[in-house]
Length: 190
Image (cartoon, rainbow, N blue to C red; front, top):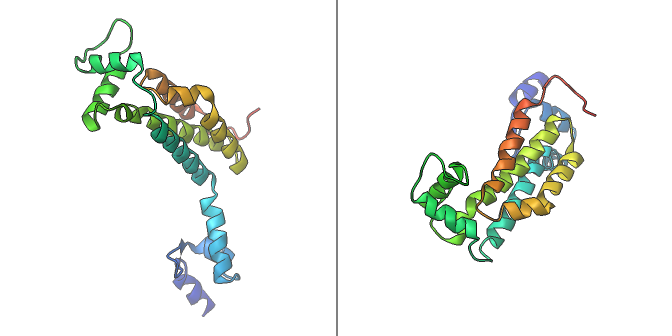
């Protein structure tokens, strides 16, 4: 009877809609249902990956609410003009910023908030990559929170991710390259 009960409940669906697999059920089977739900929430909503998502959303919301406060930056007007005449290269900047500006104009609009949306997304992705690097290096919840918080409040990233410039995207590419090149077999870093 116990074996049949365990097979039947290898996927436990609580009335609240939370699904548990066999290991989670085995850990929580001696608990009250309310305690099992609280334990599930503690384990999943406060996981390092959930913390990364929370900080990324905070970063995105900060920029979405504040990026239309000031007028156009001079370089943004220049990038808007260059996005009308895409080319393989320009005298004073690489072509990617003009392509990103064109993409922003096609997807959204020419408004100030619209052209600054993609840099805000880049800032949120920068936090995601920072959190992933911390977890890849063996960091737990506190380390992930500290790393994401440092990127969130760093004045340089608050400034870069507010304007449409390549400065918002370059750190994103650098961190992605670093994350990709982390040796996976090393357990501890000094």
